[in-house]
Amino acid sequence: GNSVTQMEGPVTLSEEAFLTINCTYTATGYPSLFWYVQYPGEGLQLLLKATKADDKGSNKGFEATYRKETTSFHLEKGSVQVSDSAVYFCASQTGANNLFFGTGTRLTVIP
Amino acid sequence: DTEVTQTPKHLVMGMTNKKSLKCEQHMGHRAMYWYKQKAKKPPELMFVYSYEKLSINESVPSRFSPECPNSSLLNLHLHALQPEDSALYLCASSPPGREQYFGPGTRLTVT
Image 1 (spheres, each protein chain N blue to C red):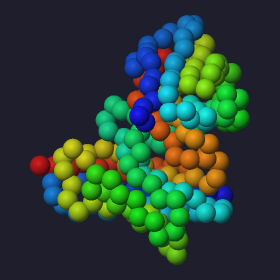
Image 2: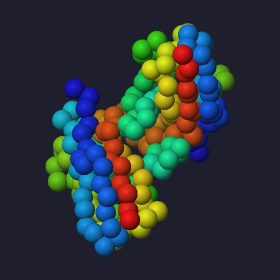
Image 3: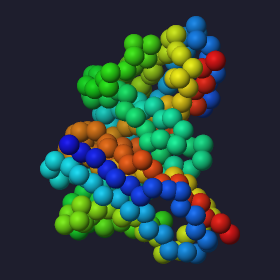
């Protein structure tokens, strides 16, 4: 079956630090992969996506590369800001099937 | 325009009340979803509508009743809820099988 395993949080970083949040997936077939971000008190926003192996999704300085050989989709950002403080969810989807979410990683960036 | 709107933003209701949550999108998406999210957890899928027909009901209690009046609107009717139903209720939409776009959610408190 499909599942997503995500790095346990919380993660606390200083401003301008490098961010990595690990995500691995198991799936039947070839899933599309997503990172969603949830700011306090808000809904989920699609941050980036990749639909096939070796695709790189990017948005707002965040990047993630679809690695089929390691079944991974790690989220990275070179220099985090206080405004990046949020909960980040990795998710996978195969065909018309449901989204499978990871457990979420809470990021706090301190000035 | 990638906006999904939800009303109300907050709702407090007693266990004997009847209320409705509303969701609207104008992106032409033919799949719409209801999710329930408890604090510090990922969203849990409740219902999926595809082309205005209910396609998935994730064994949700009958006190939650979804309705899709047309391709832009999705309602969730609530009746005789329990305090444990207090949560953030998220609506999402997508082209079938594609990335989902979420609304800001309705924060429901059952007293």
